[in-house]
Image (cartoon, each protein chain N blue to C red):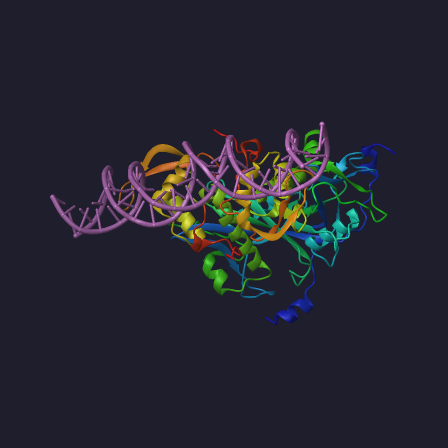
Length: 252
Length: 252
DNA sequence: TCATTTATTGTCACTTTGACAATAATAATG
DNA sequence: CATTATTATTGTCAAAGTGACAATAAATGA
């Protein structure tokens, strides 16, 4: 037996069943107290007219996470240098029939864009692709049929986000780098569909946040302290109010 | 524009960068108070002599989860009809250079096999493949260099398992369908590398377990009540003892 | 019968939580 | 300018949950 180098030099790839590898993006942002997702209304077959997640194929020289960032930049037209964003892998969807045209395996990603809670980031399609539009997530899930298995993906993304917000400061990815407790609380309200008590929320979050010393004047009411993230984990976790319970966690 | 049916009939797949799609399996079981993983000592290049995760290619007509179950049966030679097992998707690893031979994207899966805490399931390779052997996870992670990116995958699998055990009864997947509190506690001890207090453990778990009414005699000491899983979620979660802390959760 | 081992229940001080009251700090309004 | 409405922040209090560890119960082997 030769060296590993020798082996690789002589290696001839055999035929393995090959698939097209894509990424799909669940891009979330919060505005007006509502969780929104960037979705595209499909112009062509299949699933013409249905809403779909933005996405694209993974190139030969990049991994899935890189493709997700690239597609995020391309499909939303956002200047990611300027705009705070977070991308993480969600899960992979590989049903052989999930795309009726050909076998496409999709590595879905969760993308979170920071907002001030009022204005959604502009979705400027560079030029080519059909433009993604912001859609209220809970409404879409309740009323629309999404293309492909994108309904499953969107549901999984929402579950992941809602779940992670219990024990991490992931919610802070949806607000500016420095934020007030109300801004952060509104993210919880929007994602969990609940109304957190302001006093208790302050008590629980204060130990994992860093006080910047600054205050931000509000439209109405007292000015709020500006914080930044200090610790990433909330321990013990924040518990979701009963109204926003984990799916499938029925009482017996 | 025609119908969707018409469209699909006329559809000609274009050339997209295609990849080979594989699954890798992190198969865990607990015996002797130690978490073990089924690993294969590689006989050929690349990474000759290194330990690797069992795995294989996803076929054209199956999804990744199906491939994972199939590989679990093939590579371990287990009768999965008889043996309690759980398989879930972990994450997808897609670095273009993760396999030096060709581009292989792997959807890693976490597989949990039930044991009585003493005997590991036999790993009988049907005939073909190099046989997987049980290896102590913590030791392997500390001392061995694994093939490909399998070290990352194994670490991620351990993190996932340890994390899920905080807020779900996933640990019960590693013991028989009916089990005693000590058996379950030993799983926590093995995975978290901690020693849970028996009294407090009983108090915390009792509300999510169903008493079968039966007792199991122990080698020494009083007989233990036999339980089965009642609820899937532990709320509020069990907190990991400081000795078994979440990676990267350093105090500031 | 006794010593040993393990299961299970109990205690107790301390922490965390949920509900909600009280006290600031502003801006808009009369 | 005082008042009102609104939001931030702190405080209160009973109830629940936790960590440490003691006490009791139920076996086995000497």
